[in-house]
Structure formats: C-alpha cells, structure tokens
Length: 266
Ligand SMILES: [Zn+2]
Image (cartoon, rainbow, N blue to C red; front, top):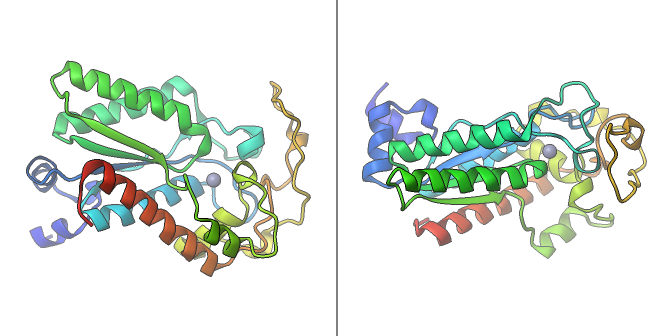
C-alpha cells in the first residue's frame, strides 16, 4: 500500500505505526474512540447497531476534522430493561461495569502514552454513560501522574441533542416516545436505513404496544415488561430520508463539539 493510501484513511487499524505516530505527535490529530454495545434491537435491526452507529458518526466527524478513529469498544454496559430491553433476548452481551471502566481507561491511557493529547469518546449506548465518565476521569488522572498533564478528553452521546425542527420532521404526525423508549424505534431504524441499509429488515418490525414501565427496576429483571421483539417502540414509520437528516445532524453535532473544545478546524 502506498503512503498516500494510508494517509487518506482515518481508521487507526488501517494506518501503519509510523504514519499513526506522525499524525498524533506531529499533527496533533484528535483520536476518536467509539463505544457501543452488543445488544438486541428487535427483529429488524442487528445486534451491533449501537457500536456500528457510534463508529459511523465518529468516522464522519474524524474525516471532517482530520482525526483518527481508534477501533471501537464493541461490548459495553449492561442493557437495562427500561432503556434497552434488558438481558433476556438472546445475543445481548454485556460487561460488568468495572470491566468496561477498566477497559476504556486502559485504552485511553495507551492512546495518551502514544502521544494523543486530545481524545473524543463517542458513545452510542445510553447505559454506558456514567461508566465512561469514570473511565475518562481515571485515564486523565493516571496520565497526569505519568507526566501527560495536558491530556484532554471529550465524552458525548452522539445523539445528545436534536434540533426541534428535525424532531418535528422525523416524528411528523407521531408521538415522540422519549429517548429512553427509542430502543429499536424510529431513530435507530432510520439511522441504520441510511448507514447500513443491508442490515435492516423493515418487514420484521412487530406491531406491539409501547411498554408502560413502572417507575422502578427489579432484580432479577422481569422479561414480561418488554415486548416480545425486544424493541421498546415501533420503527415502522422510519425512513431513509429521516435517517439522513438525523445522522447528518449528529455528525455536525459531534464535529462542532470536538472543534469547539479542541480548536480543530473543519
Ligand atoms: Zn441502540
């Protein structure tokens, strides 16, 4: 492969070590770390939906900003019944919280040891939230102890915010169920239709009532709380056009956030 070919990619796994080193040490490239989950998403979306979407948005933002995308953290925090359908459907593969915290903290410390000083952790799985915070905190603390006091980490859910006009267009004539019930629903279905259409089968969407969860959790979790498919709301009304609107907005959201915080040009 020519040097030009490895320079054109933003994917760390596709770079040679010396080009990677130059890009982070000499050019100060931001390193993006996508984090997702391996989790059921109904009958119509694949198990890798969360890490695939986080990786897609991270790659697009890295291409805009001249960044690098580290290999994703694919396995992640436990699926919760009221936000992800819980652990019951076959395929959902979760880590104990301390494993996730240690895994991400280790990766961030390694990137910092390589010379990365600006790292963006892009989360695609709601339940990861506080565990990623803890990993970022530890990585920053431990890197500072090793002399890398200037390591800075930005962490965000790629869908942290949505413009009201986008919401209106995506949910035209429908009720927004709330982000916590958007598991396997319109948002994820639409985004996957745009980014990975070959992995979506709309004909498999089940017509199920949106669950009405009690305001508490129980352990062991009760699988009867969750619709049979595992999706928490219907993705029936999802379209590729809505997916494009959402994904392009999220790419911009992430790029703008990284740009504002790290001062990288677009
Ligand atoms: Zn998801």
